[in-house]
Length: 75
Image (cartoon, rainbow, N blue to C red; front, side, top):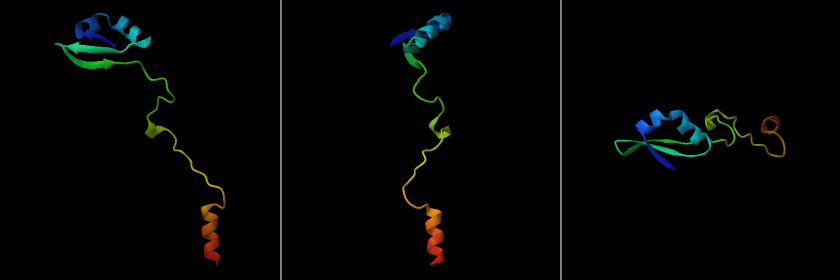
């Protein structure tokens, strides 16, 4: 993790982002205090948020629930 000032980040943004692209993490300081952390994009799985991904479908062996309900109603 590298610490850079905001002025330095603005002056050398392209080079700084190239470093981040290569896997480095940058902490940007303003007046000596951290204001941002620039990190590489996570490449794990989907880039979609979990709430936009399809839900997990659960299955069970045996008769379908609807078939069991119909059978129960006919009795």
